[in-house]
Every structure is written in structure tokens, then in C-alpha cells.
Image (cartoon, rainbow, N blue to C red; front, top):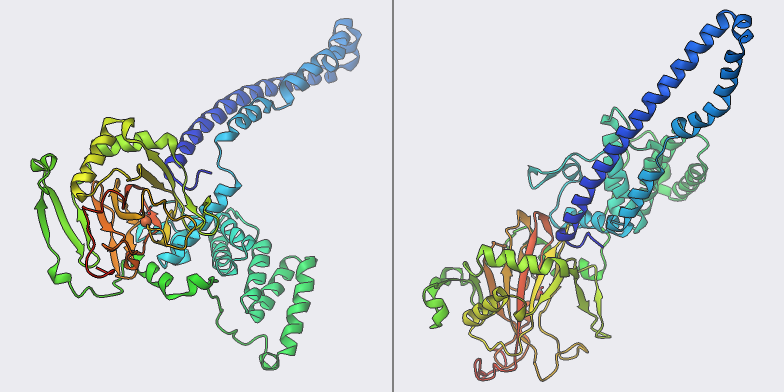
Length: 511
Ligand SMILES: O=C(O)CCC(=O)C(=O)O
Ligand SMILES: [Fe+2]
């Protein structure tokens, strides 16, 4: 699939350009053909006019008779085969050959779901998205009624009547303004009416179904549905009293959420992504910035700009971690290897793709390029941890609405995916931001209400475990959906083994 990373979607843009060229060259050929066909028609016309002006004289000439017959036999085949039949088989074949580069239905659904996710996370009004305005900036063309309709239909097919209502209403509004209508009003109303019913708005469903029957009196489903809605309304006593002409109650339309998403953590996650302050930091005034070289030779001439983002647990932000050249090299090495990111199933230990983690990632080994070696060394100097058991550098590129919902980087003890004792658990994480993100895409730590906004070349660092090796649940974090722009990160997961003497135990398990 391509929708999970913008890096792969970029290739689709190149395909699009090639296809435009193919189609244009085809049109040129076709125009040439039509020109010749027009000549044939004119020729026939001129000939018949001449002949009809004096039929007998004309046909009395055997050459004319011969030519007339030829026109309908030998010439005819040439005309029909060569000129009348549009020759699109070539084009069709060529376009089919490129089919492997095309996004597929799954990509469309992924992109549609991502757009709906962005709408929810960032509280975006439907009309604003349809106008191509995300966060007050107009960055895409306006959506047509059909674009809205297809988005609504994707939601409908997923049983998501909440978004279906929003987008079918938008499709109808847009249809009103369109000179060349791009969607079918009756079909749009059909979807909207049913979704309204599913969300508990029977009266609205009835009203719309009546409108649908006006447009299409023989609509089979509408006839049955209307009967069904009327019956429902008849049995509900209070509804009976309400005249149909009266104002209808306000439309009820609640987002359909599973139990986790109904809960507090998910609400806090979304609020943090929007940049809201959910928990005031009592130590904010104590946070410091400093230059540091950790007594490492490599850092002496290039001290780090270290900024405290949170004190306990300690979260550090480094302003100058990677150079543009290092970032470009890492991206170039990773691009051909990007694969849909997987997560470990806690029950089976299997790696599998998951809707709550949408990005593509790749692993880069140290010996692949001098830059990787250099970056790994810098991470070692910055974190002052032993890297013998650290994982390879992981590079991730987030696609449309790409995100990673709240999770821990460390393994819980009861997980079958827990790390081998030879490497130990993930003691710390260093996350490099390798692009600026125009809007969205923050890294947020939910229990402590910390939000870190990506800045190209910067990095964030934290310990996932207490000194005792116990998991620090306050480090639960997430990557917010990317609203506008690209998000590239690379991260290093550092493990316990080798760090026993570097980060020694404290007196209590929770320090
Ligand atoms: O991309 C981010 O901001 C965070 C990524 C992350 O948490 C992870 O990959 O484990
Ligand atoms: Fe993480």
C-alpha cells in the first residue's frame, strides 16, 4: 500500500505525470485520425453531390461505377478499421502496464479514513476540509460534491454513520452550488437518510426519504424505507403528536467510538495533539537550557543545546542533533526499504500492521554508511549509555494522517513479546526529527501532558524504565496524526544490558 507513507505517495505523483503525457500523445494521434475521417466524409459528400446531380450520366461511366463499388468494399474496410474505430487499445495496454504503480482500493480507503481521523483529532468542520482549508490555510483545491460523496460512502461502508452524515450533507450543500453537477442527488439523499435513521433521527430520515421519492417516485428502497420509518414514528407516541410540517428536532450525530476511544486517555491524547494544555506543569519555572558536551571529545567543538522539556520523568530536547546532510543521507538510504510499520501482537508475539500505527519504516545498519556510524556515535555521546545491545537505527515516514496511538516503548513483563534477557528491556529512546511538520504530528506524553513539536534536526530523549528496571508508565506517549506536511523521524531504542553499571539502581524501585 502507498497511503501509509508520503515517500511512496511521491512516486505516484511521477506516475501521474507520465500518464498525462501518454494520454496527451494519444489525443494527438486521435485528433489526426479524426481529421482524416473528416476528409473522408467530405469526400463522400462531394462525390455524392456530383453523382446525384446527374445520376444516369454518372453511372453510365464504368469507371465511376467501379469507383462507387470500391468505395463500399475495399475502401470501406480501410475506413472502418483504420479511421472510424477509435484506436485506444494501445493506450489501454500501456495504462494497464503501469497498473502496478497505481494506488489501489485499499489505499483509497486508507486515505479516506486518514482524512476522517484528522477531522476528529483536530476538530475540523466538514465544510472547512471540503474547501481545502486545514488550520486556516488553503492548501488544497475545493472538493467536488462527488469527492464528498465518495468520502461519505467509504464511511458508510465501514459502518461509520457519523461521518457518513457529515459528508453526505456536505455533498448536498456542494451540489447546490455546482453548475455541472458531479454527484447524484437521489443517491446522496438515500445514503444520508439511512445514516440519519441509524443515528436515531427517524423524523429526518422520513423527511429526506420523501424528498427522495419526489426525485425518483419508483425508488424501490425508498418506498419500503418510508413505510418502515412511518411505522416507527407511529408507534412512538410523542412522535405522533408532532406534525410533519413542524420544525424537526436537532440532528443527533455522535461519533461512534470503541471503549478505548471513549475513555479519558484517548480524549487527552487528542487534546494534546491539538496543542491544548491538559495538565499544568508545576515545575515549568524550573526547566533549564544549557550547552553541554558531556566530556565527550566529539562534542567538545560541537556542544549540544540541551533543553529540559520535563523534569520527572526527565525528558530532554536537543536542538542541534543532526545536520541537513546527515538527514538527507538517512532518508535516501531508508526510502527504498520503507515498509508498512508493524506492531507486536501482545498475545502471539507476531509482528503485524495495525490501524493505530500508520507509517512506513526501515532499519539502517551501522555499516551501511559512514553517516549512520557517525549518528550512532553521537547518540552514544549524547545519551552516555552503552550501545552494545541497542537496536539498529529505525527510520519512519508518516503518510496522510499517519500516527502512532498511545503506547509504551518498553515491554510489559506479561507480554509474550518481552525482550530476551540477553538484551534486556528498552531502557531509553532517542527520537530524531528529520523534517519540520507544517501542522500536527507532535509527540505527546499523555500522563504528564507533555507535547513536543517536531523540528528538523532536533531530537528528544527519555528513559522508559526506572533505574530499577521497572517500566515507567508515565512515559506513555504517541505520535499525533500529521495534518499538513511530511513527518520523518529516526529513533534509537537503547537496551538495559551493558548499562547496569552506567545507570545503577536507586534505593526504591520507582526512582
Ligand atoms: O514519531 C513520533 O513522534 C513518536 C514515534 C514513537 O513513539 C515510536 O516509534 O515508538
Ligand atoms: Fe514510541
